[in-house]
Length: 278
Image (cartoon, rainbow, N blue to C red; front, side):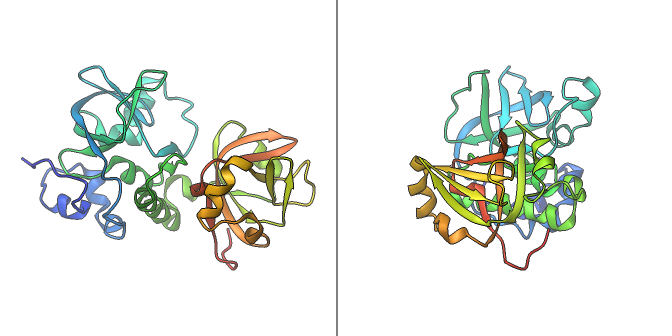
């Protein structure tokens, strides 16, 4: 049997010590080697055995607790999550169904739906489930990760899948073009990743707008509230410095005339090299 390991051990080392790691984990040895080993080492929140898959990022333990994977969003809408077949065929099911898992996080308090958010480690291999899903292109890095080291680790896994055009990244629509506001608007209420060049930065009242088009009422824009500005600037992302720069913005799509993403943390904005295309 494999001994339980901590997140301080690199995933690849853990895999080599475990002969019965699940097949998808073995398939990721090559990509995992390029991912930072540090980060996402949170407090122990207990262990459990996965008894049921609830949806694409949630499962129920044999003791009745419902666990929701922290730090990620589904890459595609989980429209068929309530069907038995969809649950059993999901990427999450292939990773954790009938597995023993270790829960880690900063807080074990349930959300208003009774779900406990956690970073989940496979007891058999020490692999981080979120990292595996990201590296396979089955998830996107969310915006609610305060730990910079952890966010960097997860972004690296996402980049691995994006470079290899795996799963959701195989589609050209995986990253929305900031110059196509109508396309972005089809995802109202959903989590999206948008890339483009910031044409102008304007302030109106307590809100700063990163405008990606010249028609401010129709084109895509990222918005930053005044209360968020200190955090954004301390991360080296002074809005004016973003003019004429290509950036990637992630978050939930809203409609206020044109499509909008409200920037609530510095991690929602990534600077891209000027010559990087879509």
